[in-house]
Length: 508
Ligand code: C2O
Ligand code: CU
Image 1 (cartoon, rainbow, N blue to C red):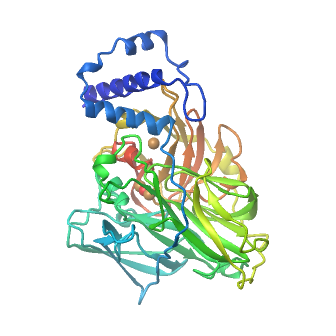
Image 2: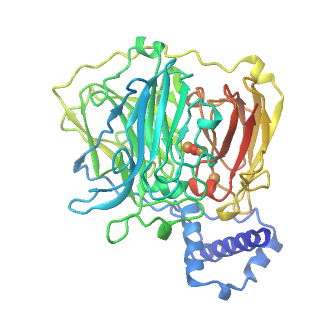
Image 3: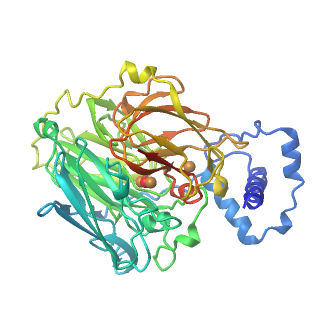
């Protein structure tokens, strides 16, 4: 195992070096930085014999390199299809039925694409539940392969968390009963079986969870689902010539990306909104791509929530970046836009992600409350000593946490229930610089205490379950588990997670 890893690392590095010498700058015109490598390392690489690599291996390596420095651009949305709205699903007599199933979806007109979904053929419903209520998720596996149901961001006992230990075989049913123990937030759910998480998510298994609480009901915020309150699940995909997903063919060890964006499963989406303030709940449900969301006209929007709850106050901003697994809620004010102006959500490279169509009849703009929450990192939390240290390192198949790859039979950390501990996570750069890892912990919402010793930006001063850690950064988190059990922590680039960038904490 060890030597295999070593050879892989060498191959990756070699491919990168040879790739880089062909063109010395990436798409942004930035010169490639090899200055972190010693001369010996460079000489070693140049002396490498590439003839032993198969063409497939070479292509694969170039693929890895491509995603690392020069991500495949996204096609613009033409806006020809109205965005699909996932159905709302509320408990009936305390029970929510959720079935993972196979199906086909007409993503391209006249073509059936084979997909997976929850209670449908692609993606899933929005499960809407309330703080304080006891619910049972009745999970059913109608796939022909094992899966799990993981509730990302939910404060839930370990045995119901749906990590790799809680495999549900085809045909099996399992009840997960728990009491909702957290405030208003937009969470999500997806599968987590070892070795198949990335592929099952890619094929369409992902749904949303809305939690409501008493405070959020009293606030003045757009909350009419499908009218002024929308959820947007962003996923990039690569279709083959038959317009099918072929995950194994496009799999990239450093994160599978695609040139085609689906929002809520809709290709070339547009969203019709009123001439009013609209709430958008953004989920980066992609395997690996990160998005920096902006408005094409450069105008500001307001962020009102992080992964796990409302910010204390609406925060004006021009762009927000979400790495895989992260969510944010934003308010966009369309009241000054008319039917003629073109307005769209775009990414950093200005690819059109979601154009808006303004319905001028709808003008019920809601005033946004100024105070939304009472989140705080306490003095006590700031002064707590670091008791858990993690080092994220490597790329491709050689990703590790504290030098180790995931082992289902190994508990990496123990932590006492209801006790806050400070986790310090360092993303150690490699010879090529390294990459951002979205670090996620199951079964908790944590607080970011600091990033490189500094208070996090306002946009991250709220409950989080996934935090983007750039190469070289050190992030301190205040982590508390309200339930007991075994929980995963991992990089949410799903291929990194599959490759073993994951560990386990046992809460006792
Ligand atoms: Cu989104 Cu381990 O999870
Ligand atoms: Cu990663």
